[in-house]
Image 1 (spheres, one colour):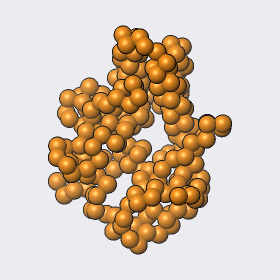
Image 2: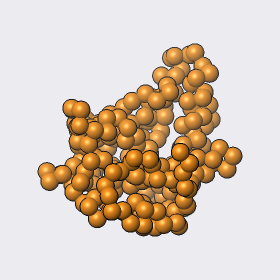
Image 3: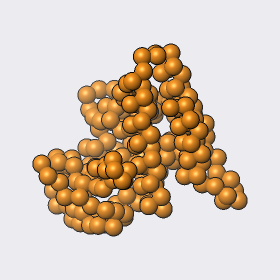
Image 4: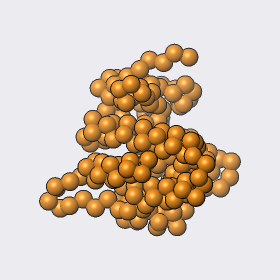
Length: 217
């Protein structure tokens, strides 16, 4: 099916007042809520827990994706297991610092390999709740410095593609394991400490690590 594509300044029919308290998209997601370094930075800052503490608490788990080991939100056990960060009344307890995929839904991203950018589209059958109205995508996402965030998302996406391609072309399982441990340590385990003087932010720290990581590919 052909999609209509959007930029973050466009209006898209994704908002619904009935969404409040529904929670369908917070159940049964298995290992599909993949987390990137920005997500981990947000969760660690918001919950006051390190990456390893988030794993130990059962909030995060690791999965293999085309040879690359990456984190995801760990749903509770069962076919329709809930997100571990839902409150007792079924609402998101981390809404101000929720992951990027949670903010995005029911939108998806369509990447352009030539420009290494992306555009948004509404996922087919993503959310069945009726009565949706248009909202500006930038407001829907609720992310400060959105253009910088979008640039980061593309950088991470294509870095992961390059890593997966590299792993697919290599039969050195020992090196693949070392590379995955290195990537986890550089991008996820090592905290992003923002200086009080504002001399750097998450994005600048991420790009320093990205430059470091690309030297081994």
